[in-house]
Length: 155
Image (cartoon, rainbow, N blue to C red):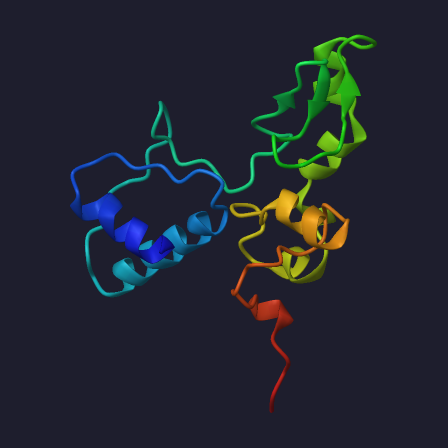
């Protein structure tokens, strides 16, 4: 589906943006590199505005969710409280919460996500990792990509 989405981003005339699809940012970069190797022209990535290319999971680094009771979460799907606006200022929560600091550091990712050469652009879905394992830094459970560092050495 994400390969189809990438193709439509090139040929549909529509400006498409993937949301909550962290693997897309890996696929997009792989497909662009593949096209360049084949001598095809590749449009530049947008770096500003609504259609700027960002990265995969933005939980706690580019977005957060604030409940109707003032609880601050990394995203609407990750039920880990970073703080309470009734007790702390938002700025303090955003800048100092442990969970946000961990989410902003891809080097803390575990499993194959921690080994992945695309971890700085994908990060996997931290909510899915948490939902499946109870650990928001665990590897993304639905990612089919095998990082080169995770491949066994066969001689």
